[in-house]
Image (cartoon, rainbow, N blue to C red; front, top):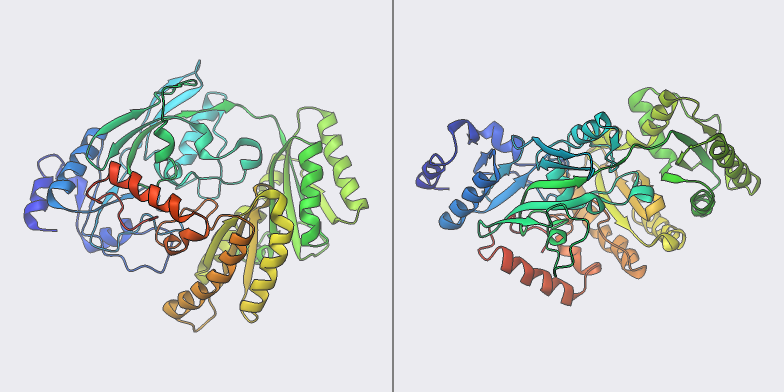
Amino acid sequence: MSSAALLELDSFLKKDQIKTDEESLKYWGKDWTTYFDIKASAIVFPHTTEEVAALVKWARKNKIALVPSGGRTGLSGAAVATQGEVVVSFDQMNKIKDFSAVDQTVVIQAGVVTETLQEFAHSNNLFYPVDFAATGSSQMGGNISTNAGGIKVVRYGLTRDWVAGLKVVTGTGEILELNNGLVKNATGYDLRHLFIGAEGTLGFITEATIRLAPAPPPMKVLVMAVSGLEAVMKIFGKFKTQTSLVAFEMFSDKALAKVLENTGLPAPLETSASFYVLAEVEIRSENDEEKALEVFGHCAEDGWVIDGVISQSDTQATTFWRYREDISESLAKYSPYKNDISVAISKVPPFMADLEKVLASAYPDWEVVWFGHIGDGNLHINILRPQGMSKEEFVQECRKVDVMVFDAVKKYQGSISAEHGVGLTKKSFLNYTRSSAEIELMKGIKKVFDPDNIMNPGKVI
């Protein structure tokens, strides 16, 4: 970036809204992926939608690419600056602006942290249900831009289902207000949904109107050791049809071992198994708890569950969730290579069987850790980097096996990215999930909203 272009920023941003020191460039120029070389040229911190629009117009004039940055918890490289881009951080656009108890909606800036929104909803006896391990640092703009899912999709759906309106800045610097929080709006194309999951490639989300849910009833959490992969979906089917199921998660014994080692938590069960499932169910009455225990009993009688426990307090439920939610943090020191994939729920059992064969063949001497939101068909595969292997060699070897993994995904008409997005890491594999016609249409849509290719270029397509 030229010094003249940098000086122009001073005309609409204050000096403390611009950082160019090396430490800041490295800190804000990355996300949770660990294998990209960071090359940002500046970090800017707008406070308003109008400042974002001015930034885009400045970038168009000076032919400078922009990368959006939220909580930087992404795992696809979508928020990574590798080509001298200017990073637009939404850290300082973090206000909760308007709340309507009647509409049960709240207007927020893009930089509001997920947990802050959840706490705000709770303080108003309401509930924001999209939940995952990074809620304490992820930002809502990033969640919307990747259509984040998480642990309660079985009951509450994805981020998309809770977005009632958006304010965005397109690649031309135009400000659009999309849907205005309406429940019904049958006036043609709903452009709001183009920006949800677009990873900042069409424009930047600056504000959102979010729907909130009524406060949830009490919950019970069950942790169960299962007899094998083939039993997982049978257990899910029983709980899905006979209880008010909120979440259904699966993790392997290797995943549990890493959590126990990292946290010092006691093992949840005396019995060991290759796979475990965690189920969270709503308990609106004593009958609901009795029904959950009855379903558990049937699963045990059928040989699908070999041991299990149900939470007896909120504290114990929180501990049970840690066995699942602390997996990623417990694996971080191994610099894992991650894959986030999905298939239709009905296809999970044969898909998992095929995938297990692929991974066992490809990584006979490597440690592979499985877990996933199995109730919505989403699996997370973590390959741990062997000691002594360089980052570059490790990634190169993992990319070779990606082809085999994604061949299995394509066979079952699944997705190469269930909830982490495409970014840089999955871009070259997009054709495994999207047809050539779809990709061409996506390119055409980007040209309409971002004719100069300055909005997070090189990501997704």
